[in-house]
Image (cartoon, rainbow, N blue to C red; front, side):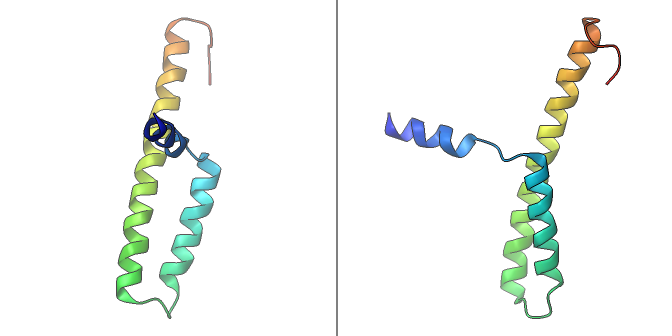
Length: 77
């Protein structure tokens, strides 16, 4: 039971704005001359995961908008 609650907790998504801010910070980090190769790989991988989540969120939003269009409830986004 407790495990399921924890799963739902981590499933809460951060907003796209927050994701983009975080990606921006990661880019700055990657551009830093002080970053080690190991650290840059870690940041890069984290960034790719975040990008994937952003894409999934955007796809979901687009699909829900398209559904509304098909029902004629929303004419234009």
